[in-house]
Length: 194
Image 1 (cartoon, rainbow, N blue to C red):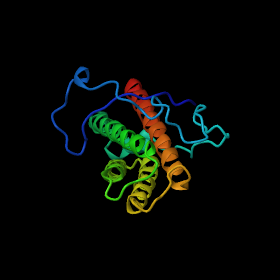
Image 2 (tube, rainbow, N blue to C red):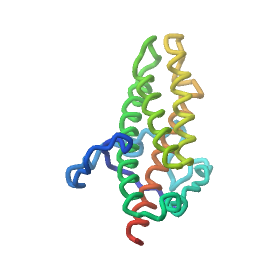
Image 3 (cartoon, rainbow, N blue to C red):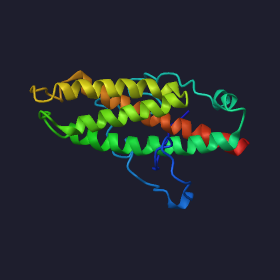
Image 4 (cartoon, one colour):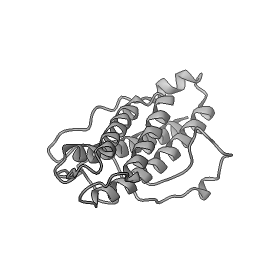
């Protein structure tokens, strides 16, 4: 299976405003893959790293989600339209903030960029947990933790080019992006088959 480059944006499903026509939604914000910011030493080949290591198995199933909501496709569609919009927007912010951090040789004390990255990771973790998308909740939680550690270490002379956590954050963002694409693909298949 292959993970294509995803594009899209929107608002948080948790604080939903009235539905907007799809034509009004933003359609082409930058993505992790589109910005060519793959983890150091890796290149995307389907859903595998350059060294052949596959992404962790993706176990998410809409069948399980549907059963929790009495197979109410209309309700699940509304939830996941908003969820995916929220995840895309958070990913856009995470990518933007991480690009800024990676472009610096070190992190200054009090730098708010990592704090913003941590907060968006927390938001993605919560949204994924609310809908039982555990395959996304875990990498988002690890991303939040790593961003928090780096934020705490800001101003200590930490060299991002050699810090292992920096590479792990890049890999986590890549993984989250790929998984959001996969959820979207399965969501579209669900709507077509209904």
